[in-house]
Length: 53
Image (cartoon, rainbow, N blue to C red):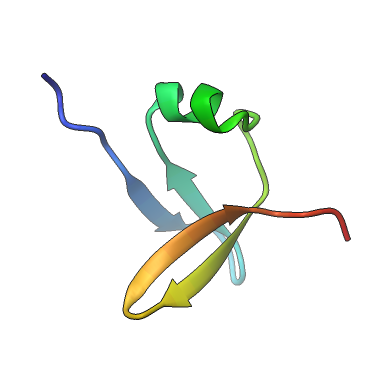
C-alpha cells in the first residue's frame, strides 16, 4: 500500500500550500483549493478548514 503523502510548502509571505491525498479531501468535504488555517500545537502543525470571517 502506498504511504499517504503530506507536504507543507511556503508559497508566499503568509501563504502555504498543503498537499494531502485526494481521498482525504473528499472525506473532509474540502474543495481542491481550500483555504485552511495553520496552528502550532505542541510542536506539531495542525491544519484546520478556515471559517467564514
